[in-house]
Length: 208
Image (cartoon, rainbow, N blue to C red; front, side):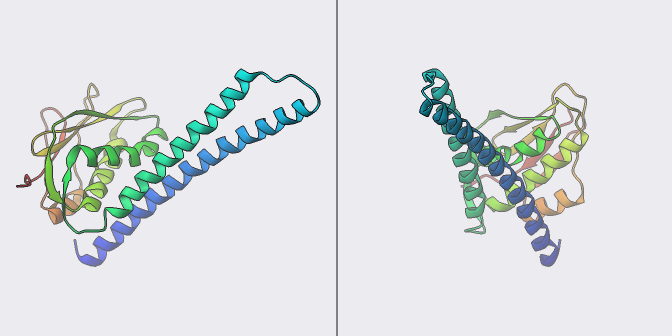
C-alpha cells in the first residue's frame, strides 16, 4: 500500500468513526432535550399548584445523569482515538486496544442488530501504531459483520501474541481481504484465517 493510498484510507477510517460518534452524541443530546422538556412540563404543573411525584423527578434526573455519563464515555473514547496518532509506534496493552475498538464499533454492529463481545484476554503488551491497530480492528470488524446474521455475536479474545476474532455457533469462516492484509503487513502484523474453527487471528511480536 503506497503512502498516498494509506493516508487516504486512514482519513476515510477517521471520518467513518467521527460520523458514528457524532450520531451517538446527537442521540445523547436528544434524550437530554426530551428529559429537559419533561422537567419544563412538571415545573408548569407545580406552578399551577399540582402536586409533583418525587419518584418521577428522580427518574428524569437519573435519565439525564445517565446520558451525561454516556456522552462523557463517548467523548473519552474519541479522545483516545485522536491521541493514538501522537506517536507512530508505542507499547500498548492489547486488551485495552480491543476495548477501545469494540466501543468505537458497537454502533456499527447495533445498526445491523448484531453484537460485539470481549472474551478471554491475556495481559499482552506489544509495540505497534495504536491508530493503525484500531483501524485494522475496525476494518476486520466491518468485514466480519458483512458475513454475520442478525443477533449473531462477534467475539474478540487476546492470547499471548494475538488478537482473535470469532463468531461462535454460526459456522462462519472469517477471512481477510487485500485491504486488511496490506494494512497488517505495514504494521508487521500477521493475518491468519483458521479454516478449521473459522477464526481470524492477528499476530504480533511481543514487546520486550
